[in-house]
Length: 448
Image 1 (cartoon, helix red, strand yellow):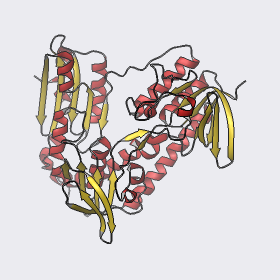
Image 2 (cartoon, one colour):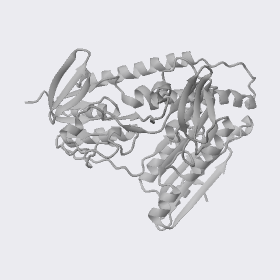
Image 3 (cartoon, one colour):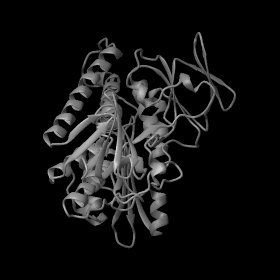
C-alpha cells in the first residue's frame, strides 16, 4: 500500500494542473515544491516579465500622447515601486495556486523531492528529511537558466535575478538572442537604461521566420537599443566604474549589470533519475513517450524538463493529458502542431505554424502573402515604427500553414488566428471573412 496514488515533484504549471485534475478524479495526490507554488512562469518568468513589459512601454506612450493633444509632463520611473507592486501581485498569485490545490484535496509539501527508487521519494525541507511512497510519480521540475563558463561569470545575473535587483542599472548588457533576451532588452531600455543586446549568431530569434527576425532587428535600434550580432562576451572584470565586458572582437563594454539569457536546461540536478535508470537525452532532458511516460513504467514527466516545447500552456496541456490518461480512463496525447506563441519584444511578435523556409521544405510550392504598414496610432504620434504581417499558404490545398506578425497587439491577434489555422482554414476562407476596420488584425483577411 502506497502513501499516495500520485505524487508530483515540482509545483509549476504542468505539475499543478496534473495534480489538481488527478485529485478531482479520485486519486490521493501529493505535490512537493522547494521554492514557491506556481513555477517559473508565475514566480520568475512570463507573469512578472509581462508586468515589466507593461511598465517599460509607458515612456513611449507618454511621448505618443503629445501627438493626440496631450501636454508634455514630467515623468519619473521608480524601480523600487515597481518591484514592490510586482512582488505583491506574485504573492497574490502564489496564494491562489495554494488555495486551488488545497481546495482540490492535493497535499502540498514544502520540500525538495528526490527519487530513491521507482516508488519512493525523499523529501528534504525545513522539518528535516523523510520518505514517502507513491504508485505513480510525476517529475515536473521545469528548466533553469544556463550560464556560460567564462572568467567573471559570478558577476552576471540570469532572468531569475533580474526580477529582484535592488538597484536599477543605468547601463546593462543582455547576452543572448532568444525571446527572453529580446524581451528584457526592451524592458530595460524602455525603463531608461542604456541597453546593449549582444548575440553570438548572425541574427536574433533563431528558429523564427526570417522576416520577423529582420524586422525586429531593424526596429530595436530605433528605440535606442545597441544591437550587436556576431558578438559574445568572453570575460567579465569588476572594476570601480562598473563591469568590464571583454567582447569577441577584443573591445571592452562597461556596464553596471550584465544579464545572460543564453538558453535554459532541464532542471534535473540531484533528482536521482540517472541512478534509477530513467532514460535521458544528451542535454539532460527526460525522455518520454507520447503519454509522457519515462523508461521507468510508473514515472512520468511533463513540461520544460522534457524539452519539447518550452511554453507554459504546453506544460498545462501535458499535465491535463496525463491526468486524463492515468486517472480518468481516457488516454490522451497532446497535439504539438500549430502551437501559437508570442514574444513580448518591443514591438511584439505573434506567430503560429511554419516559417517560410519550413513551409518550402515541407510543401515545395507555397504562396507567401506579406503586408508591411505603419499602424494607425503612430501616424499622429509620429513614431517611426512599422508592423509586418505574413501568411504562408500551401499552394496545392490553399491551406494556411503559417501566420506571423510583428507589431502592436501581435500576441492578442495571433490567438484567434491560431484557432483558424488549427481548424485547417484556407486562404479562401480568410478572404471571405469580413474585416474589422480600422484595425491591424484586418490585414490577415485582406492580403492579396
